[in-house]
Image 1 (cartoon, helix red, strand yellow):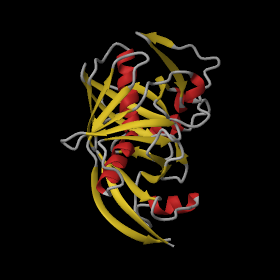
Image 2 (image 1 turned 45 degrees about the vertical axis):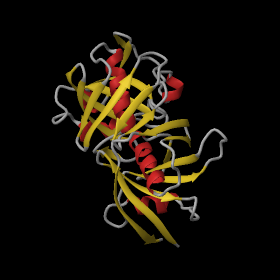
Image 3 (image 1 turned 60 degrees about the horizontal axis):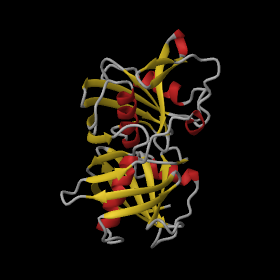
Length: 284
């Protein structure tokens, strides 16, 4: 079969976007992995599927597959790419778009300047939503945040703040993101036995109260140049720890995102650009 696609990115977090409204798409996990492979396929961090909505509350349905072929709940940078895609393809002429995802309904907006804002909904801290087993652990309190000690290989411990932004995140503060052990401990945190569904591992350096630097080792993908939900998770945990104030500029290797959060029970807003790279067709 032939599959038409669009290659896009949001701050370097890159995607294959597929219109499943005007073509039939029913691929296996192995085929998703093939598409995402940077040597034998197109190459991407995630694959985004645009479908007709199932819910009467939404205009579209949006599905996300990681590079390992697994389907996941949420992707903030992908949501921005989604808006640009449906706008450029004239699937919607509206500036405000409601989208059905695995984790619920998202509200996405495109400004006149091309910047795209995503209502990421309120963060969730319950362990059931994160898939975390904290039995036998004693957290340390800092401000409103609980910091959980996670034992790692070699006898080291990572002190993690946990939150779900529609997908689970574990965030730690580091002195310098450039020297942080992302490649060494990111995979270990991601697959730690205490996280039932694996987790995204964030490494945050606080520059000042309105600016951070961030690297994220994403579940099922590895380190990416940017992670929208990871940026939201880092800012939320930093505010709860009393070390950040909204809004916060999040500098990642692929670009900068703006995150705003009004506090407990309030939604998180993610803003940033999305870029179309090229279009093509591949034989599967």
